[in-house]
Length: 393
Image (cartoon, rainbow, N blue to C red; front, side):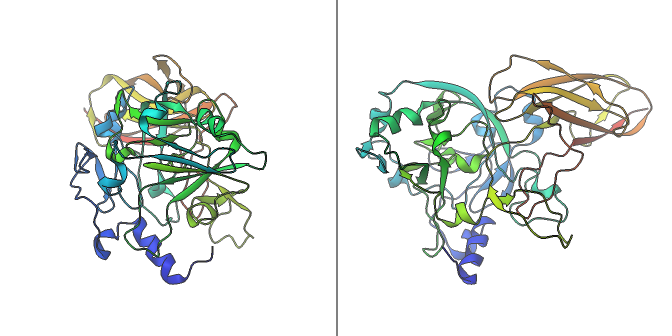
């Protein structure tokens, strides 16, 4: 689809909260997590007010699971109208290259085998604020990520019930959310059939043991563990099996990045643009917090690390600006797709300002770089995490 400059402008404005300017029927949002009415509360850092986009302060990541009310919130248009997601009338339609189309209620879905999985969910723009030169879009810092337990059914089981035709190679996902301006494209995404049929790809109706909150996609959302969150469609209402990728703006123009990184202003030719899909290895410092004052002696540094589809093998910490690195120790069990908690005991000596750094390495040997390669969308930032503290005299 070719968009006019006017439509593109409106689309970009939607992404940075122009619903407020253009007028919107979305529910008012004042602060963190949303309840069933769409109102919000909780300790989130708001990046855009309408549509509501907010991230979790990283000190919350000292817990294994990120509570739903403290989980980051991201959408392009905000939640749909209440009538579109009423549990008693909501239906999931499965169509396209299938032998038998389906129309399923929540009760119908609950007849499939129930699956529970703990997995990291992360916005592909998490860390965008640190790219240089600046990339357009919501200026996420460190907290557009969380680790939650998801309960639902396998997408594979639903597709097999419908019966796949051999021409089907991609699965298009559509939610009930709608832009405030009719000329703005719908947020429509697709995933490869291989990912859709993976036994760990879920249609989730619970988060952390309770029904999905409205702002997190109630009554049903997709979870593609190990992939970035734009593939995890919220407020899901339609699944369409296709021969090709979804042709819409949010698949063919947005959420794509160069196959080979090219620095802005280098004068080098661009490379093929591919969809943003898999997570990259990453770690964060959750404690101490940025700007804290710590006492001389033993200081416990703690944080989290994840690798998407690949396990994290090691986390290292530096307290001398990267000159030397020491291994941290993992705490808790390892689970596929979930993050690992880690700790490091630092003997804080010389008084004054200190920068703490951390970096993770996955099981393939991929290590967090000092700075993440630049790309025009500001996606997949995974440079070393850093935290500035002061050692008290």
